[in-house]
Length: 217
Image (cartoon, rainbow, N blue to C red):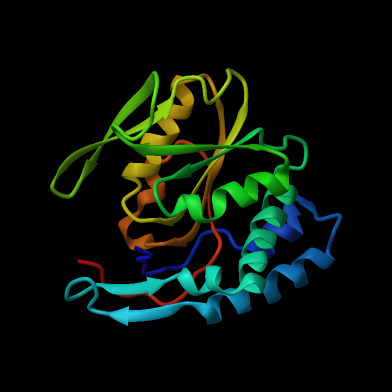
């Protein structure tokens, strides 16, 4: 499911491209490139009111992956953001959350020359695993990561399609820390800003697209 009601992100790709650590970007042309790519991606999203239940605006990201040029645009946006923001410390590992983090996490990792590590629901991964619980609306759930997936000291970025309450992303970050990884940040395509999920997360949060505000029940 590609559900989201994006709200205004506190950091934009334009800002990331023009200023890193308080200094102007050495690649000003990237600002223009990012702006154009964002417009294309935003236009591709489809909205479905009252799905899957009344009061929810469902924003479908799947058209991005149906069009190879849009898929490429998404990866390019994320790649540019990471290269500009983390110039001196390229990530060693991209961690993707089940299931929609798997849509673009492996391809992004490949572009960056990084490993890809999946975070899955409990019981889905073979061998020894680290486990972390997180709260959902109707109870607790558990994420797992294979115990040897991240080596101590490796730099890690966590990706998913949307941040809502932040519970699942927080659990993924805790798994990274349990294995000694250095958590560089979290990247999402969309954000439900009014749920303030980013406040739970212990590393910088970046949301690629922003748009209308709507209710989420």
